Length: 416
Ligand SMILES: C[S@@+](CC[C@H](N)C(=O)[O-])C[C@H]1O[C@@H](n2cnc3c(N)ncnc32)[C@H](O)[C@@H]1O
Image (cartoon, rainbow, N blue to C red):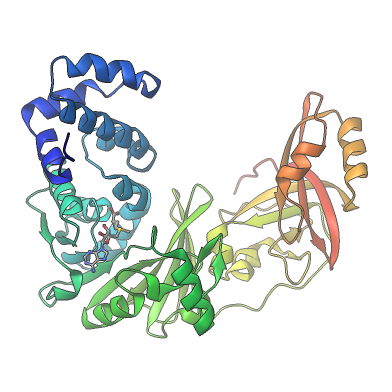
């Protein structure tokens, strides 16, 4: 049997037969895939069945990013679902561009359309460009499936050939996964500009298109937003850009370089609440002080944006160590920018003592957190025996330079 052209397989999926088949697979159990495939092949061509099953799997994966209502109407490619912007973040960015008066945007590197959809839903006209023919077809199908074809024009082209002058804004989300990791590592270490960030190398010139191209494209437009890895070192932020780090549900998802607004400022945005901190003149670090009754763990976006001092400003607190982003205070104050823990014990790091304490307190559920400690939470979880009705949190860290375990639990919320 010859290999099926992916574009042909996708257009077969868009036929009435393909759509009906796919709709019937919405609640299908992936563990039963073989049996389902055998049954469906009795009535439909084998290629169509396998395309539908593949798409059904991708839709199930996409629910976490797009929500069930959209995910089961949309189409995906494996890379497309992996690389797309989650809806919450795309909606936030579209709202910011819309608030800046943007009515049309060139979405350069549109993928399957995660961002384009959010722009269109914010009422912005979108030129969505991707050089991969299948990805562009999928983006087109998504615009149609969501009733947004009037607002989204999809073009299959290399972004470097696009005239962006008719648009109010440019948005670039370069491809940065699945590249040549070894090559990226090599070029990063040669230039000394790369950073290992969460296992990935920050080498923006290995992006497709390279970040330097995206920055030039941004400077030509009245407004621009460039999506980049959150590990971008602050030294790499161009002076004429503003930088924003965005977390969703406490996980840092991405950074954005904004052009045409607030140059030199840094911002942390926490979704879903939308709470944000922003400054162009960062405060000095809070003083180091002894561990008090409460410990605040700033949100990752706050830490990446170097806004711990700003987050701590209303807490009347200090750092537990000059190199650690944990803030401590004697009083509990409400803040959207950090999770608060009530600390019951501060002990030098020692596994035997930790085990004894957990046994004595009858701890059956233990949350392990760490900052500035070489010990892996997994190792602790493996080595301690948990038995009993109580829960606790252990924070492995350094206090004034010494490896320390802070034991406590999430603080009960206080009213504003
Ligand atoms: C990170 S994905 C975009 C995801 C998109 N923002 C979304 O939310 O669905 C990057 C895309 O850029 C495309 N791409 C990379 N280099 C390109 C180029 N030079 N011209 C056009 N598209 C390009 C890739 O095919 C890929 O689909």
